[in-house]
Structures are given as structure tokens and as C-alpha cells.
Length: 497
Image 1 (cartoon, one colour):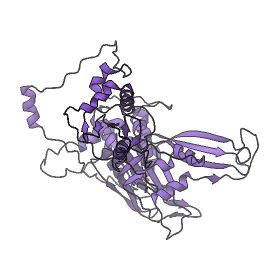
Image 2: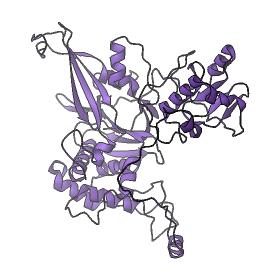
Image 3: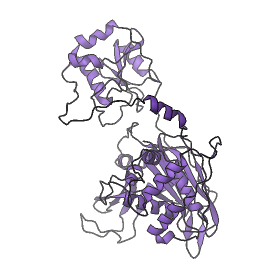
């Protein structure tokens, strides 16, 4: 799956369609990752590998290395353990591709050659690439293939694939017949690159920019193009899943009238607009609306008509599979120190831009730090459940307990005081956003003064794939969308409203 993030900034509806902007926050304390190229493996036999057969200690260490990663393509039947990424024993860098000395279980990095230095210093011969299972032989100065296939006979501790009693249909790859090959030659290839505009149906730019972000979302694309919801078989009326299924099918189908043109004719989502109006009367009509409000309305409609939807935490609908995360709020009593955590579901993050002075450099990272920093609660606003006292020293802190596959961020640019105004402060955001510093685990370690060893294999980095921007003022303006296609990593989008 890919991860995505979107950001939008807007509080109220207005005549222009506000696009959702996708932002990535800068990485303040970027974690150095040891990720050299995959080692070139040679299949020539090596006499030093006989130590796996003669030394039980070396064999046991190699088995543990395979259990950590599943041994890539070699460790069939092994499941990767859920644990923190190891760190280099010399430079203490968190490693994505750790190397394990099979003699003493020292872990080192490839890029700075600390594992090679360790082998030379202690006269050890073998080390294992814990990600692929390949073995590095110091005397030969070369990599050897994974020894996993021979381990079944060498050690009983290597888990075997469990045989299930349930009868499953045997998989056979599809081989097209002669007639099917003739039909395939008549078809046109469907491009992965989406380049198709939307017709303006009357002040509907707020809808067009959100739908463009949906089209460039790899998880939504795979869901609807994978026939997970078939509009031809669904019997619901005003079904948002059917509308998106038809939209993806139409947009990704080459134009029959002009197949040679690089872009097809504009798409008019009239039926989708009517379905939105029927389900959400607040945004019905031809007045200018807020793009973020439209986004939330569509997600609610998708949730209600999706297969597997429920009101509990175990909902498996497409909305929760793609956008759902968890936000944790911790209130700490100033007298007894008791911490009361509360976890709430989230579909996006709304970041405030008010109280930022003009001319002050503002980044997405600084907005996220403000969002997750401790704030002092008003006097008598909190009664501690532990000491039963109302204190004026209670503090509250937000953090992200569970990151969603696709992260949407809204920048709230509209402020309502005596009159509504728009905050035009520029916000800088990167193409790659590291969300580790804003997670509950990282903030908890920093608060408790525990030395942080972040798990570099965890899904915490997002690649920006869509930005929705609003140009103009509160009651007038226009929404635009900037989107990147063919991204298969975790992605995020930004709404600037």
C-alpha cells in the first residue's frame, strides 16, 4: 500500500472551491538509514559455509537472523517478527539492512563498513544480511546465497509451513487461449497516468479538486479498479461507492473517439454531485462550498455504503482501510502526576495557522510541533480521576497513536473573530514527510527521557502526492489541485483552504 497524506486549510464554506493540499513536513532530526544496494550474490560453493553444519552456535545465530526478517524470498514459512530495527554496534545508526556476525551476534552496518571492520578485528569469518538471508564470507570477500533451504535438515528450530485441513482451490495461472489472445490484441492499454479534467458544473471546483486527489490516490485506485465494488451488481440508490466505481472506470478507460490524443475529453461527474446532494443537504445547491467539507461528506457516504462498514473500531470499509488512524490525548494532573490517556479515531489532521506573526517562517513541521506540544488547561477545567482534585496545573498533549496509510492534513486558513478573515501566511512543506516525531511512541520516550531508537522499518514516512490550494478570499476564489501520479509508497495530501 502506499501511504498518502493530504492537507487542507479552511474552516467555512465559500464560493470558490478550495483544493486540498498535500504537504509533507520537513524532517527536523532526520534519522540516518543504512540502506546500501542489495548485495550481489554468487552461487559458487564456499568451504567456509561448512561452519553452519559443524558449529551449532553459528547455525543458531543464522536461524535467528532469518526469523527477524522472514529471510526475504528464501524464508518461506517464516513470519517477520514485530520488533524495533537493530542499530549498528559502532555508530548506533538504526538499520534497515542490518548485518549480523554469526560468531558473536554483533550487528553492524554495510555502508560504513563497520561489520567488515568487526570481522577483521576479531578474526570472524561469516556475517548474514538479515534482510535477504545472504551470507558474507570475510576470507572470500564475497556474498553467498541464503543457506535457508538446507536448514530444514540441519536444525529442528526452524519453523515449518503448517499444513491446513481446509480444502482450497489449487491456483493455476491464467494462460489465454488462441481466441482470447485475438481479443486481447484488439484492446487498448489503460494508462496508469491520470490526465483528465473535470467539467465545471456550476461553482463545483471544490468537488473537482477532491475527486482529482481521489484519482491519484493509489489505494483508492487499486480498490475500485480491482472490482472491489461493482456498480453493475449493487442495488443501492444514491450509492457513493457506485459513483466512484463509475468515475474510476470512465477516467481510466481510453477515449474511443480519439484514442491517439494524450488527454481524453473532460469528465462531468453529474451523477456523483447529485448523490452528494441527496445524502448531505448542507452542501446541496450551486453556491460555493468548502473542499474539506466536501471531502469529509464523501468519506462519510463511502463508509455508509461500503461492504464491511460498522460503527466500531474494527470497521473494514474502504475509508478506514485507506484514511483511518488514531489520535491520542493525554491529560496530566499537576498535583499527583496521573496521566489520563484517551484514544479517538481520525481521518485527517487539522492544523491551526492563527497566532502566527507575518514574516515568521512557517513550515509544516513547525505546525505539527505546535499540534503535538503540551498546552496548559484553563483553571478548574479538569478533575483528576486519581486524586479527585480540580487543579489549575493540568496539561494536555496530543499525539498520533496510529498512522493512517494515507495521511490528509488540513491547514486552517480561515479565522472567525469579529469578521471572517483569511490567513495568507505561506507554509513550506517537503516532498517526503517523516511523522515519527509526532507519534505517541516517540513523544512518550522523549517525555520519559528514554534514549530513542526509532524503528526505521515502521511506516512513518509519507510522500506528497496531492495538494489542494485555495486562491482568493473568504467569499470568493477558486480551488486548484496539484497531483503526482505513479507513486506506490505511503502518500499524503494537503488541503490549503
